[in-house]
Image 1 (cartoon, rainbow, N blue to C red):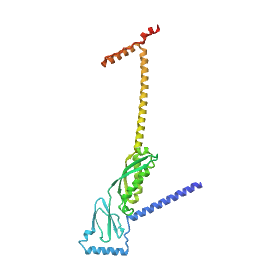
Image 2 (image 1 turned 45 degrees about the vertical axis):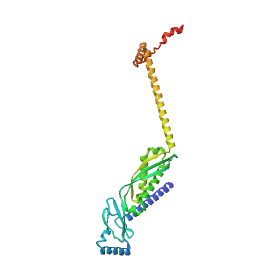
Image 3 (image 1 turned 180 degrees about the vertical axis):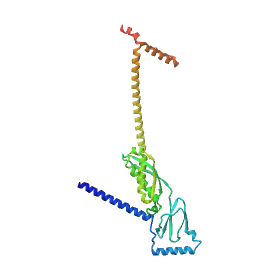
Image 4 (image 1 turned 135 degrees about the horizontal axis):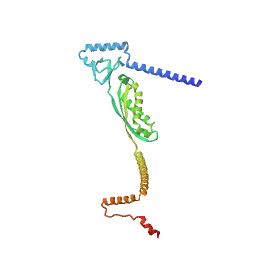
Length: 294
């Protein structure tokens, strides 16, 4: 009972820490998606000066203030180094202050990249070369800019590492037959790891599994031997079935002596139909019994 109570207390503590971690992560995510625009007194003074300069230099400055982002893009605006409240802007027109604001364009379209061939040691100690393809897109532009330096490069490196880790727990037969399951496992792992980066992994596919030449020859020899064994078994079963059929036919012919003569005439007819120049007439043993007895 005491051990059960301790185990229950440990589980409760673990759950409480997990909930606190989730709450902390949610709070951090909310702070990034809805940042504060408090830039201080000095910051507001610089913003005021920038607005004043923009008004003084109109209409020339208007061309520096108006920016356009395309339908598939979003703009993250930084004002004095802080992300503006409201998150990403676009698509369409948006305004910036030329002296205090800067922005970064983020492509929201699905991006495809090939995983380079990876030399992987499987669970049954076989070296194989495996490559794949990953489809992902930026789901949250703010997190993709604020939480990681280069989301694209990080996703590519993580995909290579994940491919090695997942295939290292599989044997060769599972890699060759369960590609869909391996791809789904990789997608789940990548999607969970890149969630804090604002990236959504949509699909992962295993393209090709390359085996060493010696292993290919060994597998081919094994498959050929298995096919020959099955062929011999099938031939033996056919001989056995044929012998049973011949035994039954001999029993039927033995019951009627005329049936043997009809079978003999049918055989002669078959030989003559093939236009052979030589016909062999078998000599019945019954005719030789009298000579043998003497």
